[in-house]
Length: 126
Image 1 (tube, rainbow, N blue to C red):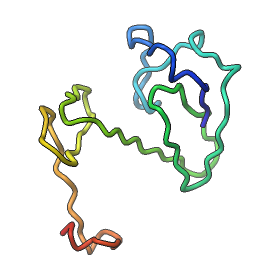
Image 2: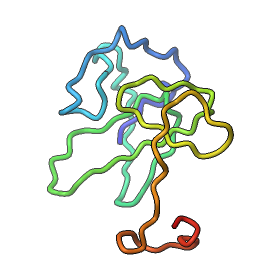
Image 3: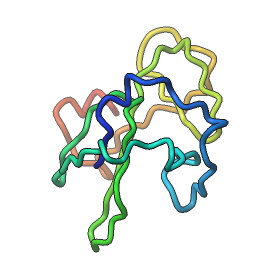
């Protein structure tokens, strides 16, 4: 993964100044124009299989193409107050706790002992 240190402290780039990307080819549908990036300041962070990165969501980050035969899989979790209205198409919200907000929440997954690997406390999820 590559990051541009300190970029999380700068003003957020408005989507109107970004470029549209093909979501079938890229993870996101918006990207930052090359002239807006201070690539000389970029630092590589090597993540091994099973590693995670916890970082400020405003830091400019990304990765180079994966030319290996191994998969690269990412999972993004955003913990936000339920008062936050999520209006992005195809962004699904799972209600964790507190009073439900105005979002359309997906049903919480149910544990199926015939399909899923058992874990400590799995009985509570049946």
